[in-house]
Amino acid sequence: MPNILLVGNGAREHAMAEAIARSGYSPILFSFMKANNPGIASLSDICKLGSYSDLSGITDFALDNKIDFAVIGPEDPLNNGIVDALIQCGIPSVGPVKSLARLETSKSFTRNLVNKYHIPGNPKFKVFTTPDGLEAFLEQLDGIVLKPDGLTGGKGVLVQGDHFKSRDEALKLCRQILKESSSVIVEEKFDGEEFSLQCLCDGKTVVGTPLVQDHKRRFDGDQGPNTGGMGSYSLPDHLMPFLKASDVEEGLAITRQVAAALLKETGRPYKGVMYGGFIATKDGVKLLEYNARFGDPEAMNILPLLKTDFVDICRHIINGTLNTLKIEFDPKATVCKYVVPKGYGLPADHPDAASSRAKIEVGNVRKARLYYSSVDKKEDGLYLSSSRAIGIVGIADNLDEARIIAEEGVKAVKGPVAYREDIGTQALIQKRIDHMKKIRMS
Image (cartoon, rainbow, N blue to C red; front, side):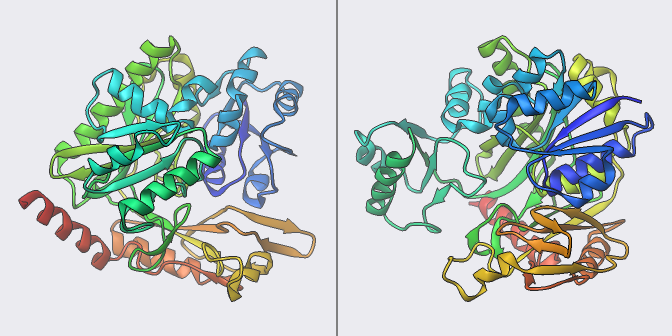
């Protein structure tokens, strides 16, 4: 019975806790959270609340409980160097050390790495630390994407047509970003369809998991502001209907080359999740960004389908022996819908903004899986925060059935909440199929 430490308190970590808890090794789970997630707490033997920047607090908790290994959920503790701190205490982790977590925490590091090792997928890009040369480079691009260098919670990317219209506006935004960030990455904008390819990596071997498509826009029809992700879906064949098999192979090949480049560049093996955000274009697959952990919501699509023991996967990642383990997933469809406060993603002066402090009630979600995210459990019940509240997941033999299960589950949450009805619908997927057909024919 291994003692396992889980760091994190979101719905992603709730899904990870569930995967750990159902292991055949009957592990004892210890969880370190910055807020009390009732789902994680119910699966844990001991929980501790604290800050992810309190490295000694986390390592002391691990040492006191004789932890065999840790699993790190979110990006913040990775960025703070928790894996390095645990290694110094003799405790290995599923999660990269701080220098390798730059794959996510520094967009300029990743772009420059891909460029240096001649790995395909990069856009035309340039990193600016001052405004010098900005205007001239902007003139070279037909479409523009701006990215502050650092963690932005999935909401920092600014895209021409969505967040600004002209080059002049882009120039002003760049100057503003440089006042708040050390650098800004200016990239060409791609036309295509995005997909998430989460891979498991032990430093040498990279194993792909089922493809997932995330929906970041707040409202139905992919309208409104970008959010941390309003939901996602996956299909029984673990592919996407708007992609070709070669697209997936290209994405996997890029990730394998990046893993090898990281080892060569730093001398240290990447152990954890390499989550590639890719876009299929008429010129092949391009790399949007990497995350150094499972996606949220995408973890909720794949972890419930995992047939291989998650503790075995963790041990093989740590030991560098993933090539000897067969990793399997159920051939099922999944639909994840996030229940959020009505005011989520809206301005602070919006009439629905007060919903972020409201009390909610969760009834019977029936066949759906429920994963708590940013909720606050108090003595008198469950309260919303300003972020996403609960991930509801439907799992079935086909997408329509999975969507119906998720929809029924969402309706069990009562209070001033909202969600996207269109995630997992054929109409939304058909738009993507038609878009890719048009792009590939042009």
